[in-house]
Amino acid sequence: MLRVGIIGAGGISSAHIRAYLAFHEECEIVAVADTAPGKAASKLESHGIRGAKAYEDPHQMLAEEPLLDLVSITTPPSSHASLTVAFLLGGMHVIVEKPMAPSLEECDAMIAAQRESGKILSVVAQNRFRDDMATLKKAVDSGLIGSVSHLRIESAWWRGLAYYDLWWRGTWESEGGGCTLNHAIHHIDLALWLMGRPTEVIAMLANAQHENAEVEDLSVAVLRYGRGLAQLTSSVVHHGEEQEIVIQGQFARISQPWRVTAELSQPNGFPVTGGNTALVDELNALADAHIPLLHQGHEGQIGDVIAAIREHREPATDGTDGRNAVEVVTAIYKAGIEREIVQLPLDPEDPYYRSGTLVQRAPHFYEKRASVGEQSGEIIVGASTPTSND
Image 1 (cartoon, rainbow, N blue to C red):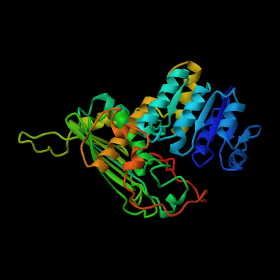
Image 2 (cartoon, rainbow, N blue to C red):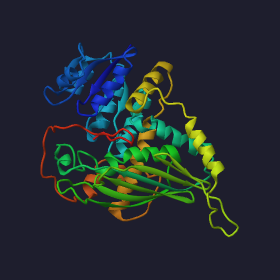
Image 3 (cartoon, helix red, strand yellow):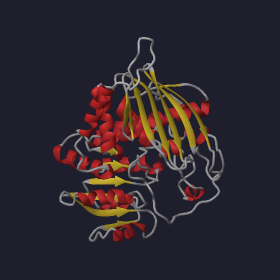
């Protein structure tokens, strides 16, 4: 029976708690920590967890719970690196929420601690554990669509002004960035999973609607993949939150939500009326053959980590996956701030590799004008679209 601790008792911690409870035969939540007085105890009570201990200092939890096997870190991004390193070196496996950290320097420190400790480090990428995304991945990997020409990703979210009033949101120092880092990172991870790492990035950043935040609420980036391009919109200003991934291949177009189109050429290069129905049928058959996952989202990822511990193997998503997503975000920020085409991978000598560069160089679109410790209201993360933690 794995002994589990959770650091951070905010909204997203409930997704972790529900996931662990789904595997109650293999793990038990024994401790929760949050620096806000009474918050950890309240979180335990709200989920009906009895016998677990509440802490107001995660380092006290580390000192008093040396037999913990696995820890979920669900705190604000600026604290991810220090907590992850401490608990890995304390002998515990770690699952850390997205984004892995605000800088590549911190990501590399986390990966180094994982290697030194020999423990598992998994960065949350829960949308890889979804039936629709698994279907899209299978279709890309099948080769049926041919080489990819264009990838269009709409990471479209909507958040009201009050969203950035929460104390840690809306500043480069505490949140690490805006919608590109904290919302679109899910779609960026999916792009990396589907397509691999791009070679070049160009971008523009804006704050279109949130006068109470330093950070961007909108960015548009273009990424180069071989002969093709990817177009990424990151946003918290899109009404309706209509998210989409469209992949245009040599032979067919596929997308999430699932839809297939395939053209055939006339002798003059114009499309044949009706298109390639045989290929459309083949791709739809591939999608229909997908066997539904037993566990999805956070539950799927946490289940995989528990299995990885049991089977002494690497998790499906690890620290390198988390770092790769942060690298693309960092390139987008550098491209937007410096107004240049950014080559990947980023060199450790690049100023944007280091912690603190964004705080020094990023524009303050507006100054944060409110700071509240808690907010009421439900955290909506969606069901059929990639989910955000915020």
